[in-house]
Length: 612
Image 1: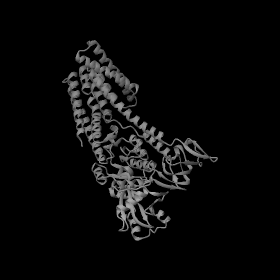
Image 2: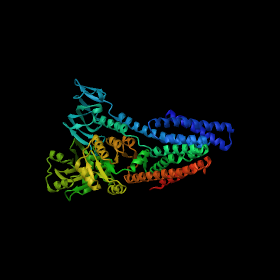
Image 3: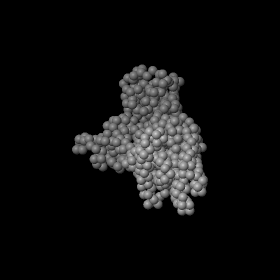
Image 4: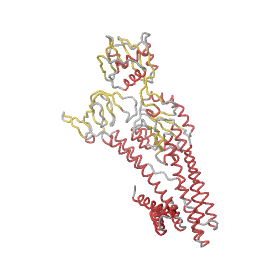
């Protein structure tokens, strides 16, 4: 809380206390009058300073309208009005500051989660140092379970690397000598000696941090909707009030004009609608960070989606089990595979064993388990060898995979990962695995289009074959695959440069820069990383994509209600000003009318609580 906000809050409480004690006759009138006039005066000085500062820059803002209202309230001895105006302004500023602090926290978490140490090989010795101290060309050792601290090229070793942080890929990437690796990714199996090619801010993870920071610094703060009207309304009120006084020499008429034009309803027109919409969205499992998100959501015409964990479930699942001989059923194929993979930590193994467990199959502990990095596994069972893995593992054991059934199946399942199961030197079956689209993904895309979105694009770090398949299944207009975080940002920037209003939906650290650069960032709540959630303007709490069209609908309804509120508030003010200038409305009547105006705006805003 800033000193200005603290002062306003303190004296607002004093003003409310003065009004309450006056109403209940709890204190002598001199004391209650002093409390109220002090509160109003401090509010006038504090808010008036901001209004004058804006005027020097030729800006007619809500601060100026509020200052006029407070002056009019003091003249007509409506001290409660002055206090309410100040209270509404300070509440809005505090909410804006809270949102900004959340963005700062998100960036700080990114910095804290980057690799903190690196093991560098110098003069034949392993030295643990800060990653920023690694020199380009030096050899860095990364052990199993550790994060890779630099970008580089594998000099020696073989490993499975979880690259979801950078590329969003659902399946760990197999890497060996000569392959490129990225900072911030994690080795799941194996160890690597890596020649450093980029460190610190120039590494991939460092660039992600920079991209998020840049997006936050470059994104211009949205103008409050009421401020847009204040540009024209405020000067007009000033001219009218002074003209009335000049023609009538009646200060009470001028006071009535200023009181009837008190911007309570205008000030409430936006926050009341936003609070109601945020509350409604929260009940439906959508967390909206601020009014800016709702306003921009109402204008979205282009939607950009991440694939893994957003359109898809982000989890490998068995899509098909095939037996190549009548001697073995599909359950027996699955059981052999599950027993072989029981001691493996690979994601494929987890998907296979979980599926077997759900089916109630008996998974015995394997004998002579052997892991073949990058290929698969083998065990002994019933005095024979069971081999489970890819085609290269079959070739290593000299098992024939050129038979028609096997080759036809592999061709048919080109969009999935195929695991072969062999016994007695013969391939007896196969299991297909893939990351499946979320339920009703296609219908949800259709609903999104029905809410005014003209173009839907998928951006992913996954491979082209898998990405194209998902995009076709879900009827997505355009798909770009094998992208790094910076590539996603560039695509979104290009779309915005075309004058489009872009919403981005994602869940990973690799999506954070794109979420920050988009007009509206939307994060998946359950699968989403902290940085994605805190960078986004809205969060789908239960990872439920059906909430996405609901969010779009709430955004459009919010802006519709805000415009209705503003139109009504201005219409009442115009009529009231006309009557006040003729002496037909006294300051007291003007105060009652403008408070009633604010109440009607509140009631209209509450309709947003019922949108489903």
